[in-house]
Image (cartoon, rainbow, N blue to C red; front, side, top):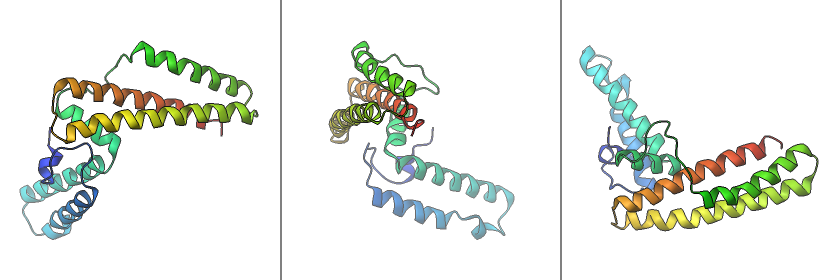
Length: 174
């Protein structure tokens, strides 16, 4: 797996310096632009095309906090493609009330009060998620690189995916 942090000469971080990410992306975009290699042999053209593609992938990953989180987990061998993850029962119990409220709203989509209640609960969940996830990722970024910490961050990653699915479900009826 290509290490985008090495590719951009950045330290591994859940919160990479976005100005540095952007600057490196534009620098490498100019360096590996295919037009600059129009007269190169096919091997060099393919090499440059691969590097330009890596640059685009690095940009897409490191400029998005959720993608960066997933990427760091993958770099550490803790997140598989299409992984099925069992969320903690306590979290799922919390989500049950929210899902029930959304189900009620789906049966009565004209009920603005039901929708607002669901939106408020979901916003509270996202705020709680941000507080917890930022605390964990800050510990990692400050040097605590333990597997147990990364496993907690992985749990937060899947919690957010769950919350985003609920948000998507709620937004279908707007």
